[in-house]
Length: 176
Image (spheres, helix red, strand yellow):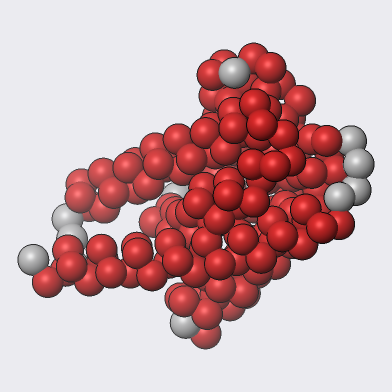
């Protein structure tokens, strides 16, 4: 078992990476529009979905809802501060991400006893669907079915890839 300080540091690092990824995704979406949302979905949002579940475990019982809410608001504010033109994107992201995170938390909580990886994959798929419909609709002012479907697929595949990376890193750290 790891010391509490190590676990807190890992949680803080995960939260920092989460904020960097969501801020970068929002700034890129503001700059490049719908065209960048598919690569963003795979690389950055897939990472955030998987880190959200990691943080769910790390923060379980320690003001989980408050911490997650603060993370979402901080991500929106950072995106706006980094790229003021990202204001509408940051608002759309915060709304979509709040709904997606609530969905993810509920599904993950219901399934976490059935195995971590299964819970992560199913909660990622469900929350990716919510985010993939709400975000482009609010950010770009129109329902974009092909963009939404492609984003959903990219988020699910990206989340699976990041789950594999995080699992490999965890196993490597445990072996060291």
